[in-house]
Image (cartoon, rainbow, N blue to C red):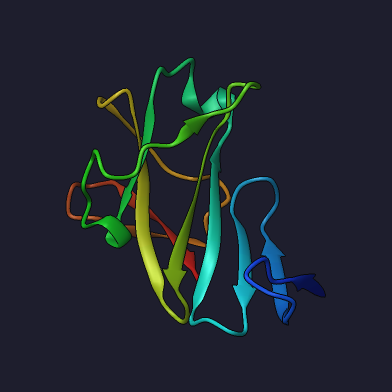
Length: 123
């Protein structure tokens, strides 16, 4: 679906295309920039009463600490990232620095060298 929104940096309007795969990953495409704003959400039941969750993947060189997620009032964790368009990114969630979790709403899954799978978001 296409909607028009006011660009906060001025009065110029940009075409924005929104896409979502359920309650998990939301994507906002801007025509004026080669990036997509992707919002990742890990639901409370998947976080299993976690104190902290980080998203770790290709977009941050698999750095455990560079992209912490915000804990929402309802117990879900969320973060938004600007990702370069026309690419695929592998990622996983790291819960309390000990447990890895995939996104049940990922676009696809790819086996990793550790005998598990990585979630993939395509933008």
